[in-house]
Image (cartoon, rainbow, N blue to C red; front, side, top):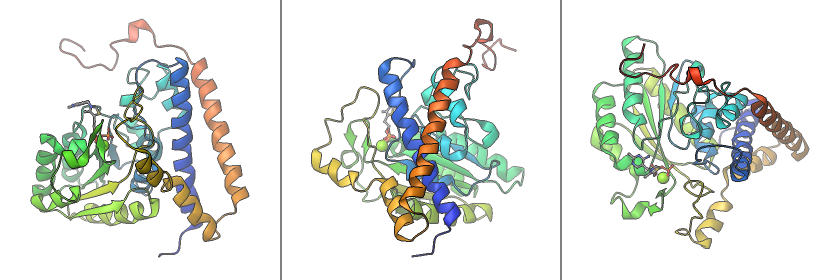
Length: 324
Ligand SMILES: Cc1ncc(C[n+]2csc(CCOP(=O)(O)OP(=O)(O)O)c2C)c(N)n1
Ligand SMILES: [Mg+2]
């Protein structure tokens, strides 16, 4: 096992903790009825987001899904602008028009999330083509779920990225379910990463709850992409702690399954390693955690106090036929 860098390791832990607490607070705010819309949450999948995106720059891109909170926070979208978006405020990262399923901020390379399952894949390929044509050396990380890997857009996008040798990293978060349907009812390959071979690109299955394993695989894939060696597919094995969406009690998963994944919580795995390797003591981490919790509470207060969007701005930044 490689020796860990203190600053980076603690930074990755803090980012995962931020995403976890953000999602926990959103859950309660949502149940309270203070937020409009719906939610698909990413608790349990934080290591995929943070491990994949930690080493990217603002000029590198990320496309996300209907479950975008961890991805966006990991790419550097501010918690304040995300919170304001959740309250549908004009200071939200999408001016209050996107909501939970469409968060993003292009100024940090987070393409506003695309909630159509499989919809982000061709967009990522288009961005990859643009990077290649402009010779920018930037890369695109494209997140999608196991369910999305059965969409036609997955196959077409993988093939296009391969034949054009594009700097795209296909990051499949295999959380074993597409809504309530278990993966083994939907595919006959052992590993979703086996599908990469069909398009002539490397594919790897990684422990998606171990931020270090994800990050090592991401660094290999990013290096290939930056050096003109083309796309990679990474299958990140993970598990969502919550239900599919707001009203899902996950009755299709059993207690044993839940217990087995709970002990593999990505935050616990990361924290244990930080402590075991002596990078930080428990007290230091607790202090850092409480600063993050304070920041989230402040973001909630800030968001609640922001103005609502103006009716006359309803069509601003909306592209429609006949619009300007
Ligand atoms: C094209 C399309 N079909 C169906 C839906 C409804 N839907 C939203 S999420 C989802 C399941 C997606 O599963 P997966 O890709 O594994 O992502 P996960 O929810 O597990 O993160 C479905 C069917 C949709 N948004 N888009
Ligand atoms: Mg899934």
